[in-house]
Length: 243
Image 1 (cartoon, rainbow, N blue to C red):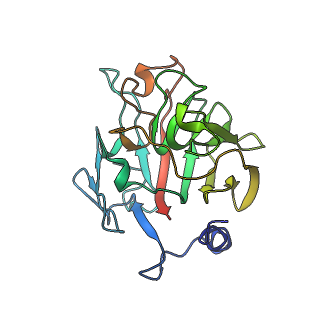
Image 2 (image 1 turned 90 degrees about the horizontal axis):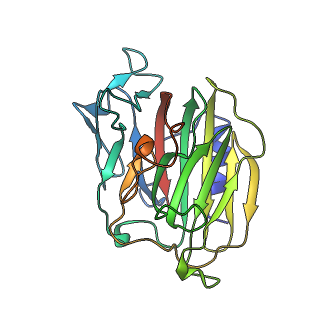
Image 3 (image 1 turned 90 degrees about the vertical axis):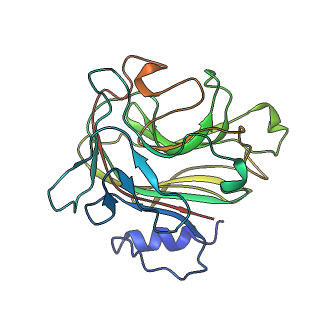
């Protein structure tokens, strides 16, 4: 098991403490409030990758205590996103272990939407490269592809939450992979796991690394997949990436 996952699950019960040892493995940490957003820039508190908000910066409350409201659709049908990198090298991403953790609120039905990830599927939902934490219809999911088990051709495992999500409710969501097992947790409870993937994470070269929408080299939220995707705004409070 990823050595930070048990810590994350325990801290959920105490509303998640951000005070971590400098060598704890935190490699990405974005808080979406007025303190940590300057203009359209969200500071990466782990120091590696500041993120850029595309479109309107809309905090849920003036104080920014509850989180950033994503506005998926503008008049020109472009999908808003929080972009860490439009084209990132796999060497800058988690290699063999990852834990992605967030507080997130879904406000309405949506198809194949991303919360955070660097994932390329080349318009084939049965193949993929990288990893993605997101939601599809009424379920959260954590998708990942690895080099093990002859997966160089893009075999991907989608782990789904095992209960329907409730619109308008805040959830603590964790997707974890330790090079051997892949797991998804919702509100501190293990919902699904798999040992199908193993070894290093298998990335596509130069894929986008984004928050708040699914995006790859030829798909961009509601400009792809389905007219039902990303039709509703969602709320995000913070995101952390660990290795």
